[in-house]
Structures are given as C-alpha cells and as structure tokens.
Length: 406
Ligand SMILES: Cc1cc2nc3c(=O)[nH]c(=O)nc-3n(C[C@H](O)[C@H](O)[C@H](O)COP(=O)(O)OP(=O)(O)OC[C@H]3O[C@@H](n4cnc5c(N)ncnc54)[C@H](O)[C@@H]3O)c2cc1C
Image (cartoon, rainbow, N blue to C red):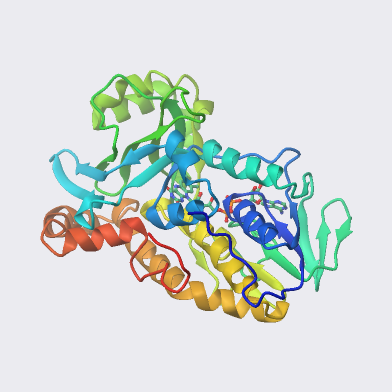
C-alpha cells in the first residue's frame, strides 16, 4: 500500500527546499518532500538531466523505498529478478562466491535494472508532480542559506539545502580523495545467446587483479529488448595502456578468462563502447552542517562491490523525509536524519572497505584466503544467511523505526 510520509504533528510549515542533483537520491527526495507539501526545487548541472552508467542492483531495502513512491511495480516490469550472486576463481574453477537470497528467506531477491530505467521512472514522477527542475545549473558552493552556481547566479534563501551531488560534491566539507586503485570498464549489451543464468550476477576472477562480470538488467521499457551489463575490472593506471592497445588484445584476455563471453565481446567494436568508472571510499561522520544536509554518495561513497550505493541513496531520501515530517525546526532536521541513518551507513561502509580488496586489488594473499578459506566457509551455516543479510542491505536493521518493510 502506498504510504506517503505525512506531517506527523499535523501542523508543519511548508519549507522552501533546494535539492542539488537529479540523481537517484535527489529525485527520490524531491518526490517525498513535495508530497509533504514543501516547495521543492531541483538543481542539476546537465542541460537535460540524464543518467550515466550501465545497470545496477536494487536490493530489498531500495525496493521498500520505491514501494513507498509507488514505483516498485514499474521497476519490476523493467528489471531482471536476481536470485543468486555466483563467482568462480580461475584457472582452478573453484566457486568462491555463491550467495543466494533465499538462504535468508524465500521472499527475498534482487532486481537488476538499467540505470536509465530507474532514472526514467523517478524523473517522470517528478515531472508529473510538477516539481521545478533547474537544469544547466552547476552548483559551486553555498553561503549560509543561499546557493551559488557556475554562471554566477544565486538562489535562496532556502530553509533546507539538500546535497545530492554525488561523490564529487562541491558542497561537501570533505574532499572526495583519490580514486581507488581499481575501477571497471562497463558496457550495456544485448542479452546474449550464451549459457548465462538470467537470474544471477556471474563473475570470474584471477586473483583479485582480474575480474569480469555479467549482470542481466532487463529492459529500459516494458517489452523492450533484454540487456546485460558487462564489466571488466581495470587498474586506473592501466587505462591509458588499454586505450592505446588494440581491442583485439583485450578481447583475447577476456576470452581466455571466460570463453562464454564471446557473444558479448562480439558486440564491442570500439574502445568507446566501454565506459571506465572509478570508485572512491568516503564517509562523512556528520552529514549535515546547519541547514545543509548531505545524502547519497555525497554522504557515503563506496565501491560497488556490495551493490548498495543506489539503495542507500533511496533509504537516505526516505529517512530525510521522515526527519522532516515531524515538523522540527530546519536546523534540527540534520541531526534527526543522521540518527536514523548513521549506524547502517557506518556498518556498510566498513563492510565495503573490507570486501573491496578481496575482489579488486593487487593483493596476492587476500585472494588465496578468499579461495581456500572464506569461499568454503561461506557455505557453512550461519554464513549463507549472514551473506544474505549483507547483500539485501538488511544487516543492522536499517528499516527498523522507519515504518518500512523489507
Ligand atoms: C559502475 C558502478 C556500478 C554501481 N553498481 C551499483 C549497484 O549494483 N547497486 C547499487 O545500489 N549502487 C551501485 N552503484 C552506486 C550508485 O550508482 C550510487 O551510489 C548512486 O548513483 C548514488 O546516487 P546519488 O543520487 O547520491 O548520486 P548520483 O547518482 O551520482 O547523482 C548526482 C547528480 O548530481 C549531478 N551533479 C553533480 N555535480 C553537480 C554540480 N556541481 N551541480 C549540479 N549538479 C551536479 C549529477 O549530474 C547527477 O545527476 C554503482 C556505481 C558505479 C559507478
């Protein structure tokens, strides 16, 4: 049932709220806050707001939020149900990752979607709600309650400024830091005629320095062609060399690692068919300063190893609306939001820091531990259920106290 957060004291003032960034966090926040009757304006740098990137996984915590927005069914129609995360280490062929959602409960699964499909659903809802979007507005900084833009314009004063500008946010007091050593090349390709599981994220590794993955991501629109996200882990210092080499040389490596990817590799014709994404780890210990509140990647950036970033941005949007709905003074909203989110954020940021080098690093020891000890142990109860809790995002009870059900 659609449950729209209402003003809990029944006498909230309508706040004037600026939301910076038309990503997942910004768009979903705008929807929740506008539904509470606040005057919301979105600011976005692009001339036409658009998503960047291939696909990702919505987890039960993210779906619980989309349910509240009335968009969960829309996404189910477009996405691919994921029941299992499965990875083999090569050349041994040892299964070192096998997480099944039903190890936690048969009702759980993931939903892999095209980034464009989620963006489109959120953006259409924002348009239908007549929320103003100021595109071509690159935010540079804020001075108190006023926002400043690259074209020397300013806007405000606002009761609240929400920073949903992502990992490189200029509004964040903390520098995003250097990109992690390993990023990944990504492509959105047609679902191949090959023996991939349509309900699994599949990966292959050589130590932690090579990794390839295939994720079914459904279609951008209902009834459209089924797609897959293909990714290849790459050290950021090796990007120029990869660009200078022939595509054939790289394809030979990919084929040697995972011969079944041939029909995917056939769809990649130039280097430009792949996009390189870098990752950063950064967590703000306090996601607010007065009337400025950071959500999504500007609050907690991480590598996508645990597949939680978009889901956490959705949960932030819901928690923020929950904090606003109690009719507190604007300066008290940041601490209330922090209180709802910080335990879950800290836990998953820590887990992400621990897991990332196991799958993407130059370490020789970690992959040996992964293959010989952690992989086998992960099949022994209660490890499968614990892994299920991590993957679903439910570890630490992030939905408790927020009226959400996973
Ligand atoms: C390759 C890859 C795979 C991923 N896979 C997963 C996954 O499987 N599951 C998952 O949950 N998460 C995944 N993530 C993480 C997820 O994409 C992010 O956590 C999520 O997009 C964060 O949302 P956000 O709204 O905070 O920021 P963003 O989505 O980055 O949105 C920021 C918005 O702000 C705009 N903007 C930026 N700077 C300015 C400025 N100065 N002025 C105005 N506008 C500006 C941008 O154009 C953008 O529209 C993945 C990330 C990557 C890179």
